[in-house]
Image (cartoon, rainbow, N blue to C red; front, side, top):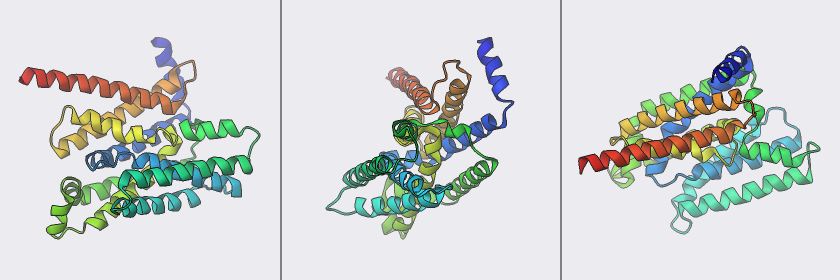
Length: 286
């Protein structure tokens, strides 16, 4: 244990490790805020769909040689989020089907591009790193940290400012629409914010594991909290703590475990713990 603490202390002396911890906490914070809404609206796997779209866009950006891949990845993912929202409201194409259509095509297209126009000698390693998280979280520049901090602050402010509208749209969209709430506008805001969070989170956990950041904290919080506000706050705390623990474990363990899967495993363990706590609370009430 002392060796682990000493190892963490040594690594924290490096600025790139501190940058990774800051960005990891900010991404966990943002993903948990909208996670409760997506789970309650039964649209949890939008994270998977958008992450696959981001993977495809990232592959195209790599093929054309863009140094700043965000110029392609961010707008494409935002447009995909809007399309998912529109098609999800279509009676002929339900939400889950639209997610499957877009995500599978984007994933296949991205992998095809990376094989047809390889940018390195080890395509398999590049694909694996993008899908499951790579060391890119440990190679962030100060500018990228500031961009992430700005987007995280914007996400939190939008959520706080439109909290009542998001609450209404989450629980009863038809009633909210009947009372004059512009539900399409707020659904659009939610979709765009999720798209931004997805793009940021790809550096942390990879495109295949992003939905864990959205789903696990929300489901864990629902086991012990009841109101929308308490669930959101609890989810945020769980997400930030588990992301921080996962990052520290990935950095401190001598085996050199990958960051993304470590965070997801920690969040899964937290879910099991909160599930047990919720089960005990229900039995005590009986």
